[in-house]
Length: 515
Image (cartoon, rainbow, N blue to C red; front, side, top):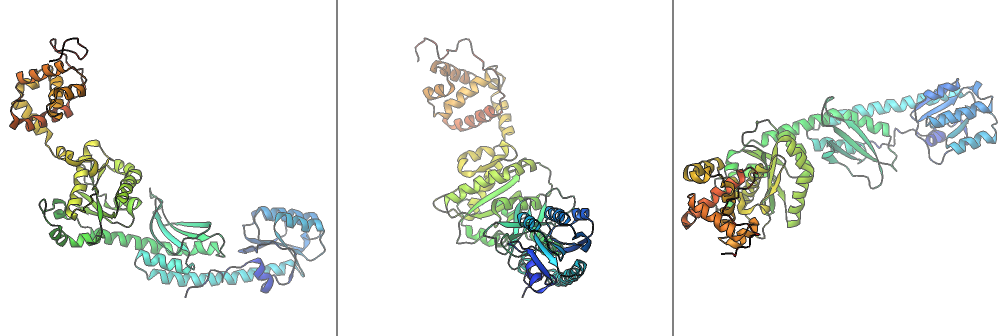
């Protein structure tokens, strides 16, 4: 059973009742008993200015002869947040006692020599500190036996009578134990990172403001536990790295379209168990990958796992061939929407800085098999590359347009150069490409295409005729799909230039009748 934090806490009321202050007479007592951490005997008034907080200031006998000295000492002690002021036993004016009351500082009168009170109090404080040292040594032995971060934090919290304790990295709680205070709390933090670490990491205790904990002792316990916390944290990271060995089969997904997910689950059950997957739950998949195919292969797994906790702390992130994968429980569509918002708000800046993109699977009324949602997330991430680092893209906003991402655009442009040389060499190529692409986009409707391009129907008809003259096979249905793909690629790779206007083309504001 752990020691209560009250046992080694010295305060004015306790020492007045059964301690070294029993031989003093209270001239004024504050409503709240102040904590006592040290004692000092003062024979020169200016020495009070060097007193630490929570100290009992004992005025030497020679300072008790004049009321103005006591008044000055009270003011200095109040400024230094002293626990109490002890003066030589004599009669003091109501003015001095009234000053102590106004300042809110305890004033005590010693029956004998104040120096004897100081010596007795120093001995009592020393005894209490020796008890603390023994308890800290016992605690150090206990916490050193824990091997996991959860166990270490649980031991610390138990030593602090259930106070909430957490390990935080860059403001993100990595692990915690104990109960969070319901009212206001005093936060005590001890650094557990390297001295030159770019990102701060800390062991934090949140002590209820209304409690009776000795805050200095709480800090001492955190400092004693810090090496064990750091060791358990590093050990946990090492184990996570070992469990998340890259799995090439997962990225390739050997199952074909429409196949059952049972075989997939069986083949990858070890990795899925590490991701926290359960067959009876519904999930969203998140795939993170590099923004370019040939990006440098720096090891980002440890950094990403820490950043990922800002999005879904209870859903692990595993490294796989081609990126990183996470499965997050998403029982409702709203959960998926909130997950996408968190990805963009909390992770997007870091992804941009690291040269990464992220993809998210979509929501469907009928839950798709596990391989499908992983494929959706992966396709979304690869499609996000064209928008640049930091892009977060959901498959719901992508759909069949994802197919265009996997087209070899250089090869298509080469086909255009070889099969449509006159179009590629034509000075009005951009206008012709835009006209034919709009015509095909609008299912062969001249009116809709002309409206989309903001040109007259006659102008569009002229450009379509010009395209036929340049060898574009618009009248062969079996070739239209390839033509549409070529024109889409050419449109995407064309730089903004002034549109060529053929001499015989008709503007939209022309007064000729449409054909």
